[in-house]
Length: 317
Image (cartoon, rainbow, N blue to C red; front, side, top):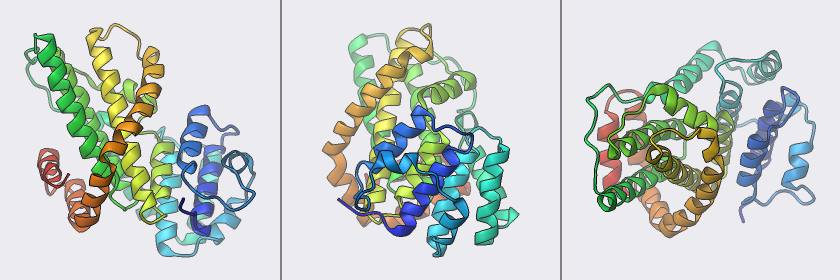
């Protein structure tokens, strides 16, 4: 079981400070943090529950992170959590002000993070309007096509989530998950809309700031962090696909909130499914690390399309 470096531990504590900035650690935030910490060897005497209950000084934590890489990972992760609702509360802004002052972070870096997070929103990733698709009428054929879609996008997002850079891979996963939902709806001859997809993500806690923040900070642990990113992206995409299938099978008539238990159950199953592909994905990331990083930056900068990215990564998976 890998150990957490002192800077990694400080980063996690900063993330907890931000999560509790409004005075409460929400159940969804606690679940994601505990889930990520479960695979790490914490310092003796420190448990995940105790860590989440601690009250820490953000300035002292900031001063304990001295490497540029550690500061980049920590600030991107903490900022993603603070900005998840597209607004910064006064208490959240105070923590960010402390980090900016301690680490010499300028407004250009904040603006770059803000733009990246805005671009990674589910609504921003929505496919362009198209004619209503023809449904796959035969139930068996529709189920078979669904399984192919689910497997492909779980692997695509798993490999993307393993790319060892802060924040960017997790933002690139969102458009692929949106495309999966769009393609599942098409199997039923249905079209999706931005509001429904956005609500699905929000209701299920997909693409949230805490998920982005935890994934980013985990990558401060070489090797293990990429594995966490891969497993999280794979399992989340798997569960999201299962919920989308059930939702469109009901013709969109069931309230999305009612699918929350299904999402949690399928997320657990998705982690088991990931284990079947873990060795192959880890080896692919090891062999193609530089290529994957380059493709991620090319997609983010608009040098290649999402379809081109997916086709290139398909060949590496």
